[in-house]
Image (cartoon, rainbow, N blue to C red; front, side, top):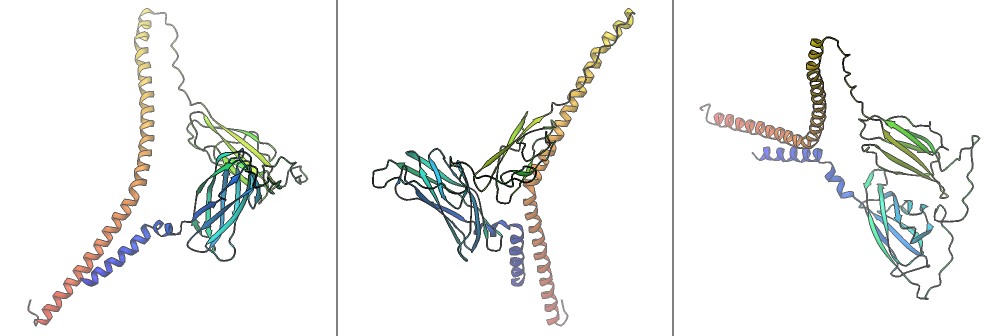
Length: 365
């Protein structure tokens, strides 16, 4: 029985590893930490130090830094963007489980403001995902007490907080910029109107009344551009609006807008009344039959609508039930297989012992 127990334990461990792969990955979830000086004064630049950590050597950290541009101005660092959203891509110094980056901001007003890490992804040296991380930091800006003189600092390259003239962007032979615009734009439902062009920024798309969501796929013309999607992919009763903002390395932005509208649902043509009949008897008969026909058509329409709604609801319910029950069914199936294996081993062990006992007793049962 000891041998059977060892086999059962080994099989159970193997099944748990196969059925619960996420348990091994949670241990690699990364962390993020932001720090600022003890005193932050209006008009005086300060640094935010961002540190990403994991249990193994990291290869890259990529994240968005969200801040209030009415309170802070981004003035230095490796991030690109500005006006409230920065995009940071940082790498470690050698083989290390930490990645550190510094960003410089200048407070424009007194008060409390927040800086957040959003859409963060970490990866190991081999490129495999190391999980995600998030962090919020509250910065309290106080009045300059005169201990430090406000400094005039250069606006960071790629920052969109600058009011200085933008860098002139090179254009190809067709007059299309080589950065800061989209190369392609497509939707999963309907068609763009007008047809896509990098220099056309407003589009409309009509979809069927039964469409629930739409996906938007876009590709920038330059690998150095940063792309940002806004709006929900789920359609309401009337539609939705999606915005795609492309920012180049100099901070120039172009925003594309797609307005999705639903076509009205199809309606059943109304039943026309029959032509007037001269015969009094026939007229009375038509008058008596017409309400019944109208009632039957209405009942059929109602029944069809209810059947369609019930079928759709049933399919949705079955899909949700299937998603919920599938993991439990897999575990139950694994437990049944394990029980069957244990039973076979136990029967085999018992049978072997019985044969040995008979043999030792000289063949007597």
